[in-house]
Amino acid sequence: MSQQVINETVSPKEEGTRLDRWVKRRLSVTQGQLEKLLRSGQIRVDGSRAKAKDRLEAGMVVRLPPVHQPTESEKKAMKANTASAKDEQFMREMVIYQDDDLFALNKPAGIAVQGGTKQGDRHIDGMLDILSDGEYRPKLVHRLDKETSGLLLIARHPAAAAWLGDLFRSRDMEKVYWAVTVGAPKPPAGQVRCWMTKGQGPEGRERMVQCAQNDEGARHAITDYVTVSQAGQKAAWVALRPQTGRMHQLRFHMHELGTSILGDDKYLTRREVPQGVANGLHLHARALLIPRKNKKPLLLQAPLSGHMKQTFKTLGFLEAEAGKDPLELFL
Image (cartoon, rainbow, N blue to C red; front, side, top):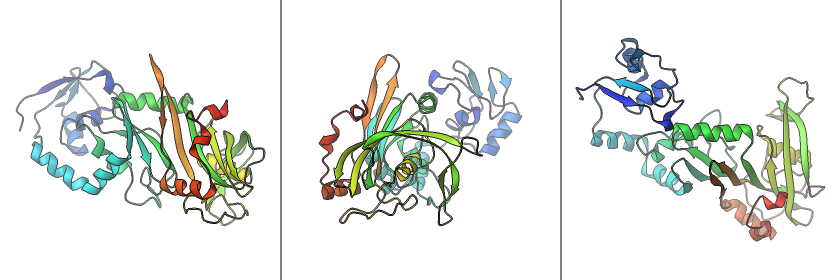
């Protein structure tokens, strides 16, 4: 039990963090206990009472009252209860790049990024504490579909989360996906533009459908695509560069071209599936080009997932055909 009041200054990395989240990184308290400390004035910001939802600014001073803090052994016990050795190994093995601001994970197909309906109990967001340095909890800044593999960025601190979130929203970050399609797109390269909204497919399942600009929920979606290689007319390896970030955008756009992504059971075409290919959705978040202030852009590339490697081998696709720079295909 600490008997001293602590006055701590908010760092630049913590700019924009909610007060309750900032406090919980330092004190072992429930939300109810935290609210009580705020109401009684035991937690203050720059000498004044504050609310849990208030956003902090760099340089502010937060007063923290004496509260029992877990010992190191207690912390280890709590961590052991929340993260199994299997989960820890799983998360660590996914990390393909890290720096002071972010982790880049190579997410396998079949695991959800966040919890939700039909997503299962085990998901990336629920295991992010494993990657924590003890000061901040890592944070998701974008998502991939459960069955999509590849690059997933995780912010290491609040300022990085704000920076990366802004990049995704402003479309300043270049993204490249690789897909294997059933059939070869015609023309072999181009751009798909359409308005889309949530609707129902032939079997009554929720999916994206094409719509008019003025329809309720209409969102404009744009995707550049280039065919890298073909296995006759039965299948193709296609590089995709989304200019917008809509739900199921790439899957829907390939379906609109009449060449659904291999393994996609929601956006199906009537084409015959090639023999000997692997099961699973063949959509992989291959590369991200991240602009950085006063530094060269950071190019990240995620190795292909196992099932796509198997299908590449079956169909005779060679990764070298795409070149070293995944963006050169679109020049």
